[in-house]
Length: 172
Image (cartoon, rainbow, N blue to C red; front, side):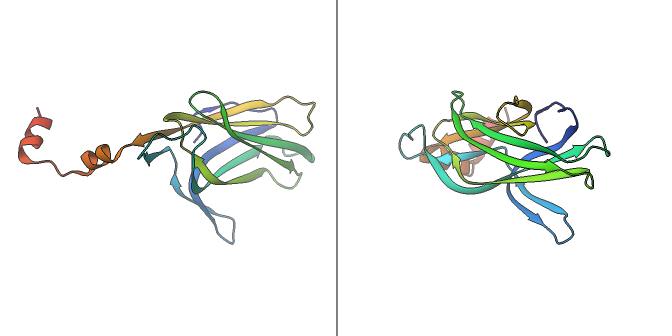
């Protein structure tokens, strides 16, 4: 779920999750595969700040309409991913509209790469507004994604089977 949530007037955020893959059945049920909380990246040499790896991932949000009588209203949802240095990695804006017949609205953003140039916590931020550039964005949730750079020697240490001597030292 989202790290921090607020309500936005007539729509309430039910969930906001980045994951590796979504499977949606014919009857509309959603299976979420591998909820993301970050990536470990093997680093042979220093990565440039804008480095990204080709990695297909998705962000799913579900909004619930509080008032059943409300008619159609146009909205825009904005996803922004920020590096640890607060620079923007990407922004995605998706328009959608509520209807009088439905009470929940699911949006899926597909992303084709994952930024890995800076180690630390990236923040995925979710905002919403009534459609139209004159309307103000309202941030409703944040989600942390950790990026860790691992050198080959660190990876070897992490995957190494400890000797009896090392096991006894770890238990002290």
